[in-house]
Image (cartoon, rainbow, N blue to C red; front, side, top):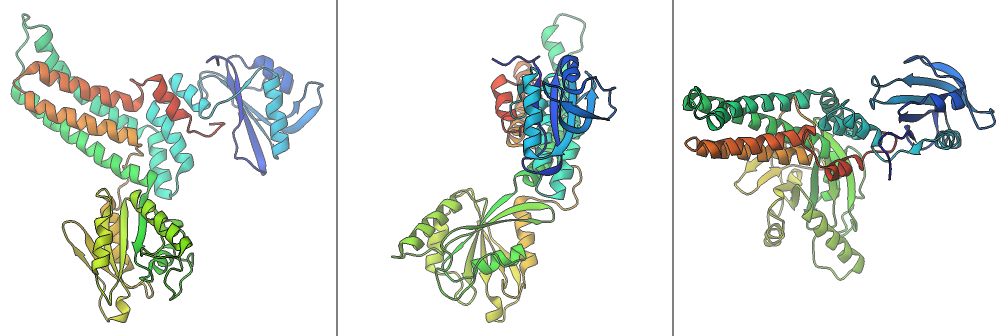
Length: 447
């Protein structure tokens, strides 16, 4: 069993060779380890050049050492950072020396978990550390940094403040019915409640967009053979990724490419043409296509503009899961002399374009952003994870249900309490150990 007070160590830089490598050590009272490894304890927050010593006093490496005494460190414990030459062998030798001196190999995310447990970060900020490292676009990185600096947590704290003020107003009339306390002013309660509900819905909308920046949109290109799926992928990606020929069935397996539109990451999957075939390899490709469609957020169903939507296309649409948005892409308009345009219906939309010439591609990009619910120029988004969205959605639901019980104070108060419990779970004021284990286990080692 690991102890929360035992020193931990890990290589904090990425695997492989580099000019510099960092080994990080965190724990209580690192003086004995520092004396054995460095021959001295560096002055707080001042880099010193020194030799890293093995058990015989010989140098393992020559580099920089930084010491951050508790509580003014990343983890809230004593932290020692050893910056040496970034060769894998050297880094492993230095890490092994730290372990020989009593440190334990850190688990994934354990440094950040200790920062959370020691009050240096709340849970939302801790998760944003991993989001910043994994950011796939500039917008996602900026959004994650804002969350790391506490903007998301501050917004949740403001919601909690409004919620607690309203609960105080309600609970007083329940707890002290015989005291000289004015009965609940319904007009005031309704006004505060309406303001709270609007603030919750705004936070949820910003979080949805932030979640989009983090996870991206899963877009699958589907359709019958030779309608231009590979050409569309190449046009979206801006490079020749997929082989394009006039021979039906050229694409046998899924081709994936991550792109971004206005800072929003999209994971595009080009798939095998959907048709009945006796070719075993192509048949396996068709099966994989349906598997990809089952996981898609958006399915772009390509059709040849010369033939328009056929009965076979409609059969394909009927098999697409309800959760996925459907967009008919009428490709090859250059062959029929048509102009690019968008038509929107209740269940789907249609974009007329030419993947060969690029005409209408801006319309498709705008349609994808619209489906994602993206608003251009938003600079105050929250880098939210799925658990944050679930908690906010449930908080909104409890707050909305509270409005149904203005005449029944006990039920009104209970719905507000449940909403507060959901918000508390976001920042970690209420978080089970198994939830913490799940969150931090996905971090990289050394962070």
